[in-house]
Amino acid sequence: IERTLAMIKPDGLSGNYTEKIKEAILESGFDIIEEAVVQLDVERASLFYAEHADRSFFNSLVKYMTSGPVCAMILESPDAISCWRNLIGPTDARKAKTSHPDSIRAMCGLDSEKNCVHGSDSPQSAAREISFFFGDDKSE
Ligand code: ATP
Image (cartoon, rainbow, N blue to C red):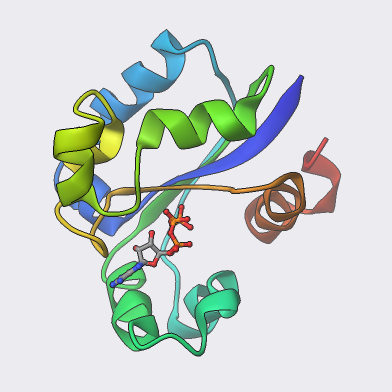
């Protein structure tokens, strides 16, 4: 059994995709262990995406991620990290619509930035990101 950090980004909440995304999560066999709706400020959003600080899109990414509340969730299942990454689909939602039409980003995302959802990409990032939102004791 494994845990991962899922996040519905501001465009997901403002576009009223939260219930649809949660249905897909539960239908896919994940348990939602914790959930919290949080407004990130510039400092917290920059910290969450610190690995992208040198990228050309960083300022735009931080602006997007602070444009409204996000919904952070701890998901648990066997292989939660890779299963959730598969369910959300590729980063660019436009590509997702052709290559992974059943993915969440295909259903709810717009482009390579406004892609509606996030998922941890490794056990290390899952532990870091779960701690970021829910504290150190929740990562396993
Ligand atoms: P996430 O980490 O949010 O699950 P990801 O692992 O698919 O997404 P990353 O490459 O880690 O993608 O990028 C983090 C986020 O930065 C993306 O989800 C997207 O919102 C934004 N982003 C990535 N690439 C671009 C780009 N070329 N232009 C604008 N925004 C981008």
